[in-house]
Image (tube, rainbow, N blue to C red; front, top):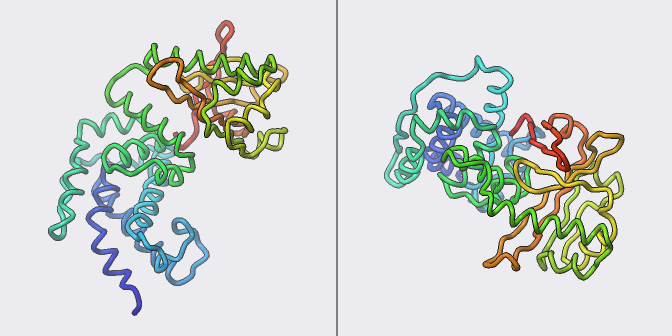
Length: 315
C-alpha cells in the first residue's frame, strides 16, 4: 500500500507551524515556511535533484515527523539569514497563539507559547544558528544530535550555541568565572603536557572517549580529519602543541596558531566537568582553519591571550 504522505504531512502541520512561528516570530512567515516544506516534500517524492532536506526519499523515512522538522528548520534558517542580509524583510507582527487543527497537537501549541512576545525581542538579537539551537532544544526538546545537522554544526557546537543563547536570554554573564577557571586549568594542562612531550600527563587530562575533529582546511595543513580515543589523541598531540598560544574562543578556553602574526588555526576545547575538579577532562578538540570563517571572526589581543568571537553569517 502506498504511503499517504499528504495525510501524514497534514497531521504534522500544526506542530511544524508552531516550530516555525517560534523560530521566525511571525505567523505568516511560519505558514510560508511550512508550505515550502510541503513543496520540498513533493520534490523529494517525485525525484527532484534539488536539495529538500536530508536527501532521503521521505516515503522511505521511518520518522517523517523528524524529517519534516529538519526541513522546516532549514527553511527558517534561510529566512533568518535573509533577514540579517536585508533587515527590511523582517515582519513587525505580533505573535499569536498557534491553533491546533485537531485534538492532539495542542501540546505543541502550548510549548510554542512558552516563547512570548517579550522574549522574541531578545531572540531577535541572537544569530540565526543560536536562535535555532535554543528554540529547538529548550522549547521543543529536540536533542542536539538532531539539531547539529540542521545548522551544520557538531552536537557539541550546537549545545554551546544553545547555552550561549540561554545566557543571553536569561541576562546572565557570558561565562561563569569558577567554571571557566576550571576549564582553563584543564586546557592549560593539556597544552603544557603536549608542548613538553609528557604523554602520561596528556593522557590523564583526556576523557577516555576523547575525539579530535578538524575542518578541511586544518586537515590540509597536516592535521587529521578525525581521531577517536584518548590514547590516539595523546599520541597525536604528544609534543605537537609548541606553537599554540592560549585563547578565549566565544568566552571559553581555547588556543590559536599564528603565522606571521595572523591567526591561521583556532582550537576549540570541549571540557567535561566532573564531580570534583580532579575529574575534569578534555572531551573534544575542534580545529578550525577555514580562512573565510577566521576572517569573519572578531580577533583581539590581550597580554598573553588572544580573544576570538565567531561572527559567521549563521551565528
